[in-house]
Length: 133
Image (cartoon, rainbow, N blue to C red; front, side, top):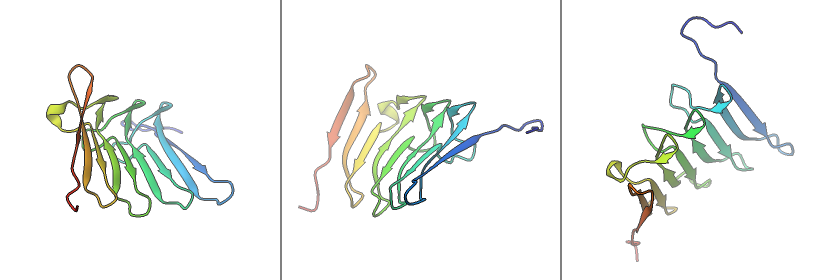
């Protein structure tokens, strides 16, 4: 393939379930490393056996990385509600002063736990009480 000036090639690998023919995951790479395209679409997307979205990841040169939102999202397949969101910059948890590193949610979308990355590399967890009880 011949490229014009200012162009770059991303490749996407797709994996299908041999029994159902359903797409199970796809990964986008740049020079062989998982890398999200400039349009901010995820570089890794995973589906369950019924074809429901269960995971999205954003990468930069093989490391979890995203500045505009979570770099990893795990979803409840029945509802699409985020189960877990992880915020990483260049493969490391974002600093606590920028917000939580990881957020965990109940099936109704309410937050039950947040984790914050300390400067020494330790993680501090904060559990949220359930308000409907």
